[in-house]
Length: 149
Image (cartoon, rainbow, N blue to C red; front, top):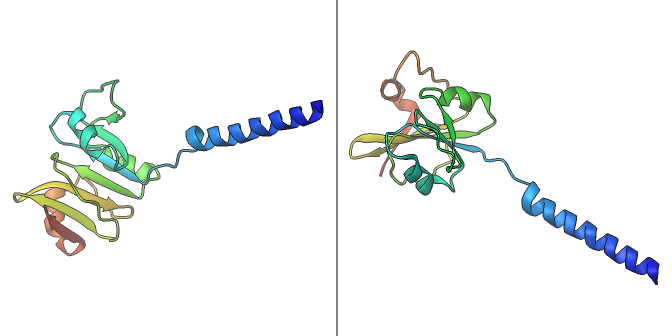
């Protein structure tokens, strides 16, 4: 009788351990890096894009209360190349942006004739030191899909 109780406690502990691991320990890494380079407040950015992927703010003052990675302005493509993300969504202005992952091209989101964001897949060569993003959009217009919001 004592052996059955010990076996039952042991099995209950195994079930609890597996459940605990799947609920708290087994986190699937995000494949989307959301880079905020705009001028608005980071709290608004978190509120709008928290469910999209990993949040990064570039050129903003670090705040402990937000779940964002803070980095210097202009380093977002370096971090994107270094890490294991499949796409980077660059937010220039806080506007709702629909996600479109079914293309291999760069997607440029336009609102009121202004680029508010862009979605870049891994493998697109872009050198921010040699050319600005808007100039890159103009010179590579065959590789860009424009979406007007």
